Amino acid sequence: MNKYCLTVACPTKRGIVAAIAGFLADKGCNIVDSSQFDDINTGQFFMRISFLSEQGVALDVLEKGFAAVAEPFDMTFGFHDEAAKMKVVVMVSRFGHCLNDLLYRWRIGALPIEIVAVISNHMDYQKVVVNHDIPFHCIKVTKANKPEAEAAIMRVVEEAGAELVVLARYMQILSDELCQKMSGRIINIHHSFLPSFKGANPYKQAFERGVKLIGATSHYVTADLDEGPIIEQDTVRITHAQSSDDYVSLGRDVEAQVLARAIHAHAHHRVFLNGNKTVVFPASPGAYASERMG
Image: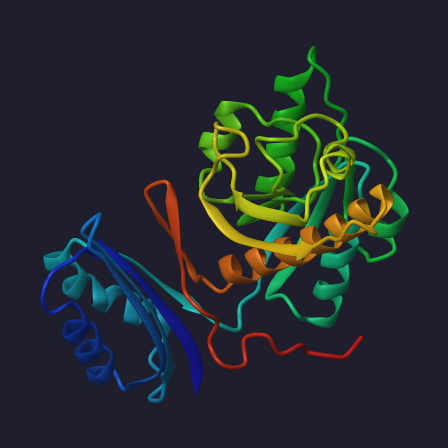
């Protein structure tokens, strides 16, 4: 039996759940997990259903047949094969903690992704990436060549068939044009000190101010830099006894965890854009299982 998921977003209206459940039942599908949210503030309804196609109905047949159900409710919907792995391009600069964490999770199958390329504006991680049999592309970015560099980045993304771009501490600001072109398909990670502590050394600033919580935020990239819709956040507590170097190490650890969780949610089709916010449903049973131990 094939396991699929269905994602739905539409204006709230009576009968949505009944229509969806009835369609799946008629097609010989058994629902094994379901999450829904009705936003009374925006009038929008969101739903994610994981189901088994017990009679072997193919994904394209389900998608074609569901169009008649979706039309009266003005639904935006998608059917997804839960066995399929999302193609991802990772972009990195000189901080490698998030990249290395993602490479490990990818290698053991803890994330439902296929890393199809790594792009960097430096050569620091070429050997690490190539040793994982992943194509590495060094694309230098300056003020003078930014349009050409971003065109080269998009060529890599498109030729690799990537569905998602992950900025794993990529320290270059993307243009508005690129952000708009890849809207909802670029995920970033950064510390949660913004807007209080900006600049090149935010952890030192936090140490000097005696900050007691270090956090990280992962979000979709928009033209508003670090203000895109938030997918995942977390914090770690600090005491007066920690040094400024401790702040950096603890911060990098929480950044790696938060980014991985955001990618996991996106790749499992658990994230829905809801204006300037997101709806993030919990993972289905078994979604965190790894294919191998290490």
